[in-house]
Length: 174
Image (cartoon, rainbow, N blue to C red; front, side, top):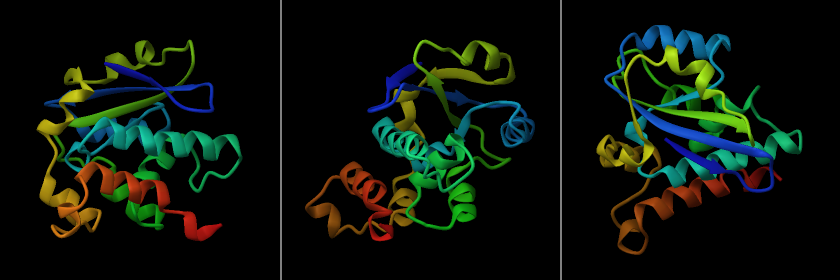
């Protein structure tokens, strides 16, 4: 399990993979209802944990300045991962589906706090290190989702192209 301190905030994120998840539908319902205060991300669209860190930093900063585009940090993370400005589309693309067997869980925590202990019994699957994310990455789907061409990859790394899109998504809205 990986815990990362976010910049300019009193917030950490805890990341881990859930493999071979049982009852995804129930887990998704608990997250949507707020019973579980975490974010469930489709791992096929994540190439590296840094992608999550960049989107989570944006979410934490937006919350700090009162500029969340969505209602909470968990949905803001999914929204920030997407290049779309359509919230529903972003949540549908990066959030889990009922047929997903593997899930990347992200928990926002205040420094010194651990929400995981209260939630761990809800996670019906094998808890693994988030660094194993690349086992589930679908490069073709990632390139399509982020609109990255092979030509672009001649001069840039895939992760750099993704992070650039996440970081600059809302520059036109200022």
